Image 1 (cartoon, rainbow, N blue to C red):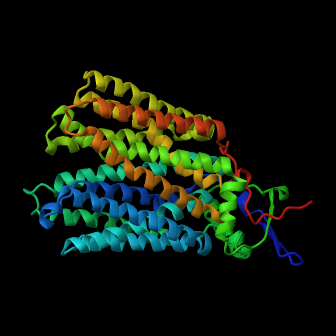
Image 2 (image 1 turned 180 degrees about the horizontal axis):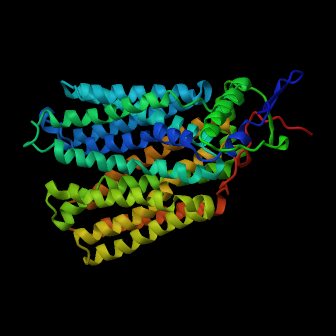
Image 3 (image 1 turned 45 degrees about the vertical axis):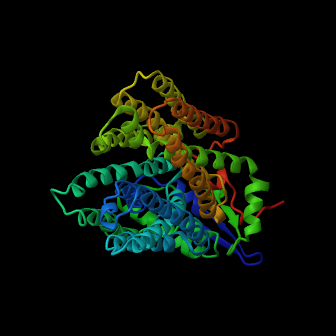
Length: 483
């Protein structure tokens, strides 16, 4: 195939077909390797949250409920720090270096936490595990969107983000087995649970080594020949699978100059001066979905116990249908984000999630629900909410320039985590001792309204990014503009 990169020595600019070549690829085994190798991050996060949520370690270390809560907060703080630190490094040093590094950090943090001899040790390494997972969110979303062809990018990204709930279901199932003292001693089962993620990660890290650096990132960092060679190798793998590739027209080339470090002031200018509406959309979508998820997910057991008299030991059984609804939403609805369109589907999923939650709030207030019907309402609401929440990560990775993509993801992720962290505490207060349904009903209406607002904002100010190249959705900062 002819060279897709041409460098103008007088200006230092590179004229490249690399993005167009990547977007015209058919779906092949190479793309499956990207999905499996990188998409495991969300499974690991869901697994971690659920393993810790059951607090099998609490009795061994004589931890009270407040200490268990602080351990969860420590993990979330680690995610925020990891996202901010490694998001910036992913934009500077490349996607591949970071998605190898962050996975290693997670493996060490979670695995060593399983060996904890004392509470302080557990706290330290839960923070380290959070660092790794937070870095994964920034580096992985960037890499996936830059390696997946535009035709498939939307529903693939949404489906991958939705696999968090597969990990959560796996963690819940593991807890049922591992925390049963007839199977394992009280100080053994929870430790085995902490090793599940690292074992999965070890199996995946070898696959990640075969995933190339993002050619788009290479192209904008002065490594144009390496970018071309990477695409050549990808195309060789595609044709080896029996596919025929057409030549890419020269008029689809873009001209870029090399970038290295983007000053923080430039990033702020991009977010608040160049794309203020996109910043509003990204922040609104991320904050609203994070608030609702944390509000319901971290308190569902309390609702079942206090209002429906479900024994503590059996509340976990209600989690499985809840997780299935969350997992199914992105898988079933994801393709519509590419065919029907981003803005319409975001509005639909956020809006329907809010509407179903509002109906359930009214019925909860009237006292006509049972534990089963309450769970069914949650399943339906989060069938839609999960697809919308997954699209929030897709949105913030699409609508900002390539050179600051990982950092943009990290900023919005961190803001969402901060707002989301307030939800469990707030709704815990609303639940109280379960004697009054009024405060929690108001909380459910609040959550419903917040989601509907998120959908309306995306419909009005969102971007039609479906089936478009990333460079068409948002022009890279390094693009050379000609008069």
